[in-house]
Amino acid sequence: MKKFDYIIIGAGPAGTFCAYKIISDNPNARVLILDSGSPVEKRTCPAEIAGQCIHCKVCDITHGFAGAGAFSDCKLSLYNPEDTTFVGGELEDYRSTEKIKNLIDEVVSVYRKYGAPKNEEGGKDHPVAKKYAEPAKNAGLALVTVPFIHTGTTLGRDLFYKIEQELLEKGVSIEFYANVKDILLQDGKASGVEYLKHKHKYKVFAPKVILATGRAGISWNKEICQKLVVKSHVGKIKMGVRYEVPDAVMGDINQLYEPKFKARATKETDAALTFCHNPYCGSVVSESYDGEITLVNGHADTEPTGRTNLALLFKMDLGENSIEVAKNMAKTINLAANGQVMVQRYGDFVRNLRTEPEHLARNSVQPTLKAAYPSNLQWGMTPRLVNNIITFVNQIDKVLPGFAGPDNLLYGLEMKFSNFIIELDQNLMTSLPGLYAIGDGAGLTNGLIQASASGWLLGEILAK
Ligand SMILES: Cc1cc2nc3c(=O)[nH]c(=O)nc-3n(C[C@H](O)[C@H](O)[C@H](O)COP(=O)(O)OP(=O)(O)OC[C@H]3O[C@@H](n4cnc5c(N)ncnc54)[C@H](O)[C@@H]3O)c2cc1C
Image (cartoon, rainbow, N blue to C red; front, top):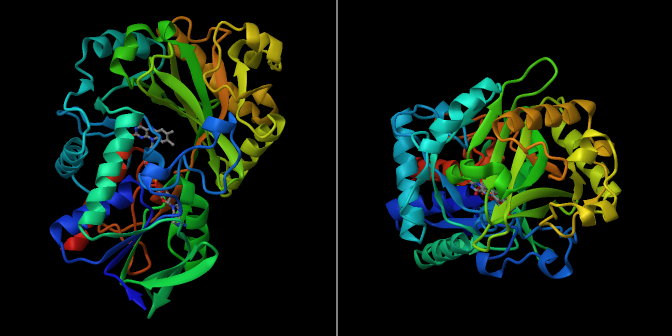
């Protein structure tokens, strides 16, 4: 019978930073990380060779060591020193402002130790942030900007590889290709897990089990929480499209790298935000969820593409089954796009017209995601989502003229499955004793730094 002190499900930033903190504070701890994906150095997306998403059951973009962080732009969001709010998560519900700043500082020092750049960019005191604050307000938008560190995809993967090696050297056990299927119980407490690896079932035991399964694990989290009667609820889902424009449209606001525009909800529209900006070297990518649906995302590396991509997301109430409803919308769009991500010219979207391949070939903005299939996104969207997109694009166009240009491109759908909220106490423990939850999969965070900070915080709590 294999026994550990801690079993962490998920080797994303939340799980790995949790392991890192436990083993640093308590070098004798027996820590096991289980992940359904591969070591970071073995992760490759077949779309790079096949030219299109082949719907892998375990998607290399989102599964494996470094989780969804491996192919990310690895932008590390910090905080404005005088501010009391943060981006990328809800840790404020669990700790004081000072403690969160302290946690962010600690995880950033780890990212830097393994190669993240020293310099910070952006922030609300940047002259460009000051220049756009008033025009944004006049357009009914808030411009939110925090300082950040831009690591980039290549350096980011290298950095996660070093963390992986360090954890192994420090004695953390990491089991890859291990798909956790069940949480085991003893006397009403979590006591271990059952996982499937290469078609064989294994059981491992520990008095403390940590769910760090990210957005890719949300359906399983929901299943297991229902089965074990772990307190949880479904919140509004963040969904929308990826938008791609020439850098010239964004102009000097790109110097902020991650300028977030936010709009409040009205009777006709939902709360809107821009998210995950990838300027100058931006490329749109696809990601597969459980081999079921293909969604869109974006990243940036070192080669200039002349394009900026960003997500236009809306917090939508799709009822108790919002995850399934949203997945069905994505499935419809995938179906209409021959199993791929769909792309559409903004001018066609507004007029509810399909973008024909020959029109796209002549379009001044060419898609960076070559496999994207031109068609009509409105076929798979609710009228409210269509209205959300057009209203928000027009608002931003008042600040950045050309943002509503007809040749700009929409890709769909983009979704952030962080709306399944697992209820936690102040020690990040669920209502099932011995079962803890951190990161995006708990509905607690939605970015690298807060996911890492949630893992660090739990590591600190548990190592005590
Ligand atoms: C393309 C892309 C670009 C991004 N860019 C940025 C960025 O620049 N800046 C930023 O702050 N954020 C970015 N993000 C978001 C960021 O990557 C996530 O917020 C972060 O990785 C969440 O960390 P996590 O540990 O909670 O979950 P994840 O990173 O999703 O890791 C969860 C892990 O759990 C594993 N898992 C799930 N279920 C099971 C199971 N049943 N059994 C075993 N293993 C399981 C998965 O394989 C995965 O490895 C990006 C995401 C993507 C996809």
